[in-house]
Length: 320
Image 1 (cartoon, rainbow, N blue to C red):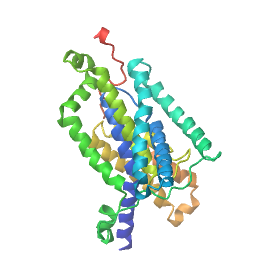
Image 2 (cartoon, helix red, strand yellow):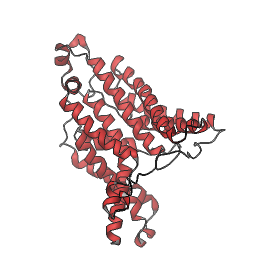
Image 3 (cartoon, rainbow, N blue to C red):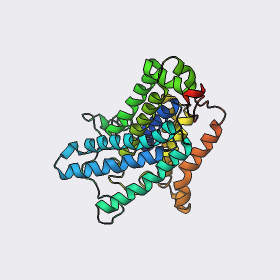
Image 4 (spheres, rainbow, N blue to C red):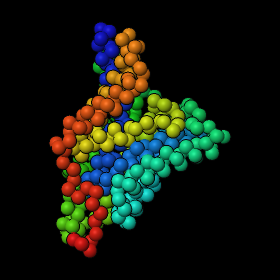
């Protein structure tokens, strides 16, 4: 029974770590399916975590109570969209190198959020601990069921939201005319333009959606596991989300599976520390284990994933 309980807890922890990756990888899919490389997922997650923490903190101060984390989520989405517009303007309107633009977003997020936190909180490098954050659900006592309860009914609301949005994203991308147009501008923009599809408009929408999703991923971390924002709140999760997107072949269902796999790697890193033999292993090696395994899996996927044909290529209507 102890092993069953441990496995149930491991699965639960895996889904906790996977949630932010699921959100961010969905954002990457919408941007790159439209033909715009988005290396800036890490920075967009940082902006989302920052906005969620600040929004929730001030909502608490205004007496919003249990509604405070939802205000934080909304603030994260808004800032994520605004930040993504910087990338969109640079890479779509001015046709700048999309990789460099994404890297700029990462540096901008890291520097500006730390500066603002210190400005708002008297030089401190982190926000105060939030009191009103998301709590794990119980579902009318169903979470108390051995194993099944811990696996299915004892999660943060954001985890359920992330899974739901995966299937919504799949439907939108592959079953609607909007999704067809978005994928068309990422595969053959000149042909899409000939058919009357506004290439730049669709790419702007794709990048803005990536900002909203990635910001939700960052907000999830700030409003669940950390209950605060600091410079190391995200710690490379955006880059792992990019790996999940690639390993999942730019498909929401595939990215979900990859995010859960990478979440398992992170959960295993935490659980290894519970064993006696792990005490003789330097903690740094245990902490880097998820990232090493992520690299191994991503290298194994090279050559098996096919990116959108026009990914990373600025579109010039005059050269079609």
